[in-house]
Length: 115
Length: 115
Image 1 (cartoon, rainbow over the protein chains, first blue to last red):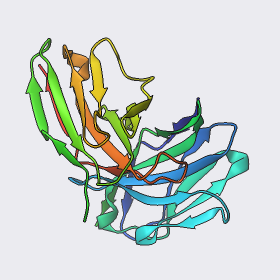
Image 2 (image 1 turned 90 degrees about the vertical axis):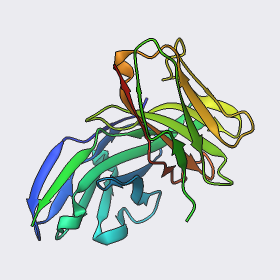
Image 3 (image 1 turned 45 degrees about the horizontal axis):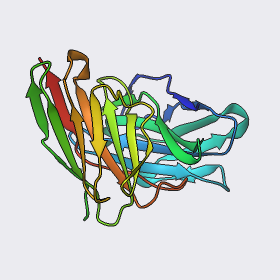
Image 4 (image 1 turned 180 degrees about the horizontal axis):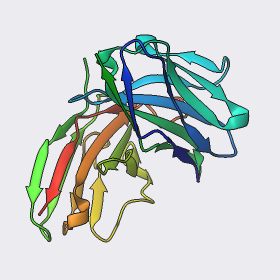
């Protein structure tokens, strides 16, 4: 069974600081990787996704993530955070399980950006 | 913009009572998911439907939880009897397919408190 680890549970940054949130997964086969974000009072929504090809994927609002297969990682980055990036971020893995696709979420990282 | 609808948004009940949650996915979405999110954790899949069929309910506590999607459109999740440990956010999501590339669209959730 696949699993997802997000080691940073709570991150506090000042505006303009750089961001990197860790995500590691365990699964031996082909995976598709996602980052979802939940802004305060809003629904979970997709930030970016990786299926194949260029391991560096770009998402909305200046976010990007790099898939490093050898490290089973899919870390989320942003060069300069803004106060509006305050949210909870979830990494998710979609992998084949028992004949269908199954999505597993990490425990989430709460990001607080201080103006 | 099409959204996943859920009701009620909040539910307070006493233990041993029955509760039911309703979800209406985005029109045309064949795959529907019910998740439970305990405070401080990521969403945990309870059940996944493809049209009206259950494709994964391995994490659904079947002694007290049930889910149905009779016509392959909207869905109901029921808990009977509710226990204190069931207090959580119950999220519904839908996608156009259950495939590897499918982005999930989430509803606002139902926050359940069991007293």
